Amino acid sequence: MVLNGKGNENGINEDTQKRVWAKAKELNYKPNIMARSLRTGRSHTIGLIVADISNAFYARMCRAVEDAAARRGYYVLFSSSDEKAQKEQELIQMLRDRLVDGLILSTTLENKEGIEELEKAEFPLVLIDRFIPNESTPFVTADNYAGSKEAVHHLIKKGHQRIGVLKISPSYLTSITERVRGYQDALQEANIPVADQHLLEIPYDNIQASIKEELPKLLTGENRVTALYALNNNLATAALKEIHNMGLKIPDDVALISFDDIDLFSIHSPGITAVSQPVSDMGTHAVELLLNKIESKKNADENDQVYLPTELIERDSCG
Image 1 (cartoon, rainbow, N blue to C red):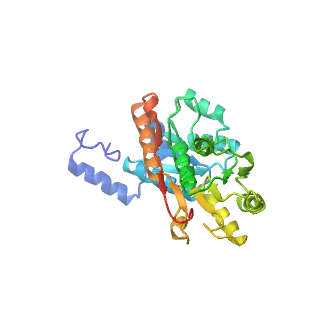
Image 2 (tube, rainbow, N blue to C red; image 1 turned 90 degrees about the horizontal axis):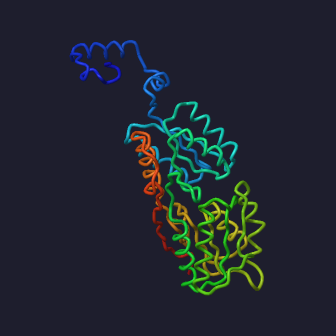
């Protein structure tokens, strides 16, 4: 009772408690967390699976989740799915085997059976960054659609009408489809035709080489684009490198804007205009949703599906 912090409530006098703690320290006693979780049904550990923990966006998200969980007395186990559905399912099972109390998941969206199994088992789950359309699964995401529209409207106000888009594969991810939809609607609202040849899909696992091969298709010829819109920070960084390799200047030869802001964009000359996502708030909201679900055992409702606003950070890369 003393070692579980319940000495006072069980009427154990202070002197006895001190003797117990002294003996535990002398014997270097450490509680077996796994055994305790089997007895109590709670490990005070949650799992977090993202696409790639080395990506600056996900690294910041992991930090926010870790900090928010620590404030509530929980630990976090981190994993990367590499956008592979099979690996995602293996990681889910591994984390469940380690008795995590719940899971925050940036899903590949190709493992619907695995997610359905979690929900059927009433295992606490919150999606982050991405969501499953037309489902009640709790999620926290940036408002990708509104942020994307704002970015494209900014380019249009700067006089650009031929705007090329670099989108990452797999392009069916909701974060990407919402950004593409925002791009298309912004053009249509400005009575600018949407040209399919201006949208390039870049493989997730071969970004720099693909950018080097594909970018000249957008930046050369009579109908070359005057602006590039990269749908994530990795694409923007790769495009930035290739634009320099081609001997072009930003924004004189081509404007550049990124969805997602990273430190590099503020120190680069010229600074790169970017849509900033509320990464810390996303992580904090996801943890709060998950822990409330764990501790109250409540069912999901419409308030558990959260869109957070983005912010356009205007710098010099758009002219």
